[in-house]
Amino acid sequence: MTAAKTAATTAAPGRPWYSPGSLRAKLLLWLVLVHLLAAVGVAWFTYASYDRLIVTSKDDQMQTLAESYAGNANVPELRPTDQRSIFERGAFVIQVWNGRGELLASSWPELAMARQPAEGMSTVRMASGDEDEVWRVYSTGPAADADRFQVQVIQNGGFVRRLVTKRALSLTAPIALLLPMSLAVLWLVVWTSSRKLRSVALDVAAQDERSLSELSVSGVPAEIAPLVEAFNSLLGRLRQAFAVQRRFVQDAAHELRTPIAAIGLQLDNMRAEVPAEVIDEHYVHLKGGVTRAQHLIEQLLRLSRQESSTEPEAPVQLDVASVLRDSVAQLMVIADRRRIDVGFEGGTAATVTAPPTELRSIFDNLIDNALRHSPEGGVVDVRLHEVEGRPVVDVVDNGPGIPPALIDRAFDRFFRVPGTAAEGSGLGLAIARMAAQRNGLRIVLANRHDSQGRQAGLQARVHLMGDPSVGGAAA
Image (tube, rainbow, N blue to C red; front, side):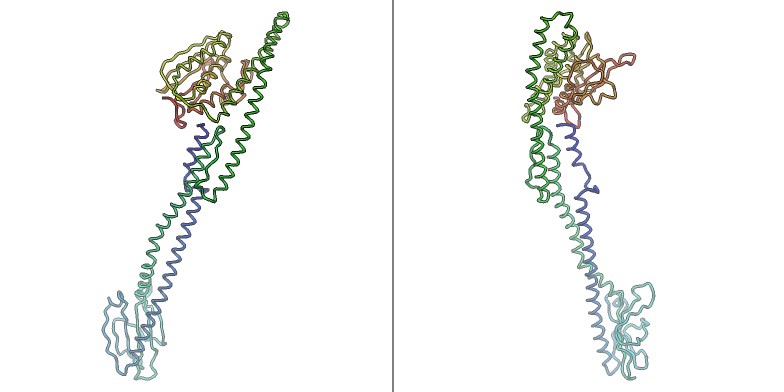
C-alpha cells in the first residue's frame, strides 16, 4: 500500500458528519427542521381546535343555564360556590338581577361583578396582569319589566385557558414523544445509506496503478449507482491507457537491447584494428555512452515490469543479512572495476516479509547508486543495525552527496543532480522507493559531513519497520 493510498484511506472516514459540505448533515438538518415545524404546527392547530371546541361548549352551557334561571317566576335559590371550585374546577358563578338593576342573589357574593348592559357573551378583566382576574360572562340582558330577572352566568377565564392548554398538551404529548424516535430512525437510515458511500470511498482509495479493479454496485443506493458505474468506466479506460503505456516501454526497451548490445560488440572488435593512440579517448567516451544506454534500457524494463505486475510475487519471510550479502556479491564486479572498497556489517538480526525480487531490487539499486556516485578508490559501507530499537539498513558512500535543495527530488524518475559525472539513468532510486512503499518500508536520504562540517557523501537508510502510518513488514 502506498503512502498516498494510505492517507486517502485514513482521511476519508475521519471527516466530521457536521461538515458544511456534508450531504448527510444537510439532509438531517432539513429533516429535523421539517419535523420541528410540523410538531409546532400540529401543536398550534390542536390548541386552536380545542380552544374553539371548549369555549363553544362552555358558551352553550352558560347560555342554557342563564336562560333557565331567567324564566323563573320567583327569585331562584342559588347553591353557594367556593373559591376553589371556581378557580380549579371551573364552577359557574350565577347572579340574578331585577329590572331596576338590583342584585337579588349570587352564588359567590365575593365577586363584585357589575351588571352587563347588553345580552350575550362578554369578557371582563377585573385587574391587569393576572389571568385569574379575567372573567367570561353571559348575560340575558336588562329586563324590560321590573318583575323580570336578568341572569348573569360567569366563569373564570384563566381556568378555561388552562383547560384548553391541558387538553392540547395531552393530545400533542404522543407527537412530542414520537419526534425523537422519528429523528433516531432518520439518523439510522441516513447513517446506513452513507455507510455504503464510505465503503465505496474506501474501495476507491484502495485502488492503485497496479490494481484498477471495478467497484461493486451491490447495495449501493440507486441514486449513487450511476456515479459508481461511470467511475468503473473511467477505471477501465485508465487500465487500457496504462497497459498501452507499459507495452510501449517494454517493446521499446526490448527492441533497443539487441542493437545496443551489437554496437558494444562492434566497438570492442573495432578497437583491435585501430591504433590505440588514435582511438583511446574517443573509444572511452563512446563506450561509456553505450554502457549508460544499456543500463537505462535494463532499468526501464525493470520499472515497467514492476508497474505492470498484476499478479505480484507472493511475499515470504526473508533474512535481511542474507539478501544484503547476495546484493553486495552481485555488484562486486562494478566495485572491482572502479577499485571501490565495499564493506558489510551485520550488527543485528532482522527478517522482512516481502517478495524476494522486490526486497533484492531495493538493496541492489541503493548499493548500485552508491557505487556509481563514489569516486574511484572510494568506500561504500553497508550496515544492518538498530536505531532507537528499530532495525535499519544504511548504505553509505563518500561521493559528492546531493545538494540539500534537491534531495527531495532524488526519487523522481530520470532526475540526476546537475553537474554529476557519474553514470546512471536516474531510475534506480525511483525503483527502490516504489518497491519499498509496496512492502511497508521507508527510504530516507541524508548527506554526510566530515569533522569540518563539509559534505562527505550520502547515506541511504532503509527503515525495515516502515512508517507507523503505513504499517511495517519486519518481523
